[in-house]
Length: 236
Image (cartoon, rainbow, N blue to C red; front, side):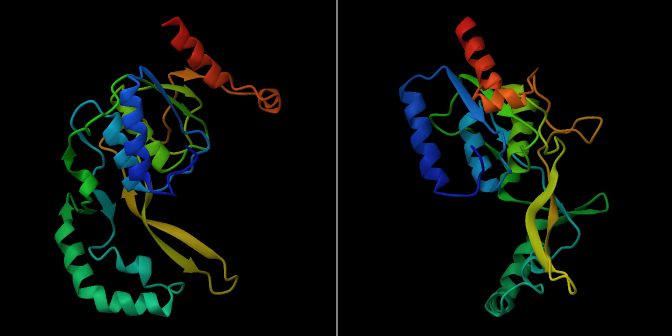
């Protein structure tokens, strides 16, 4: 999986896990190398097929204001049509933001639906799971990896993720154009975290089996990480 951005993910995962269930699959490899992330909704849906027990996928997201959705759309890069729509819809958006944003310990938190406890889906996969990661595994791929690592659901092979174990700034973005250079900067407005933490902070999800491929491996088409997994499956 090189990203979680495109396509009808519900249809894809439903069909895929139905096939895995029918085949009585015992070993599954989830390749998240070079996965820059994407939709939280998608990884939440994917995790519902990998979880074995009840789970809470996300902690409430920390924000810096109660009306957190307005800066994302009412900025100097938004089209006139977007600003008009936001103006018309503003009463409904404001009510939603105020109802879902709570203050706790002096901080504001927005509660996504992914913060609720849920059951695994029917035909969820309960066999052995291997996850491949590297330094280009960021954002959503690190978030789902944090879950799988914290719950000891999978064996991680490869390199430490670039995305942090303790969360990232994402979820909602403001696109701002600098006045002189006209460069556009995308700024995250929410602190997105799994309900797990590690100390010390500042690290990604570290592999159970660390394997760093060489340039010659890649040039010759070798995949030492995947080869280790296939060997481990064969032994067991």
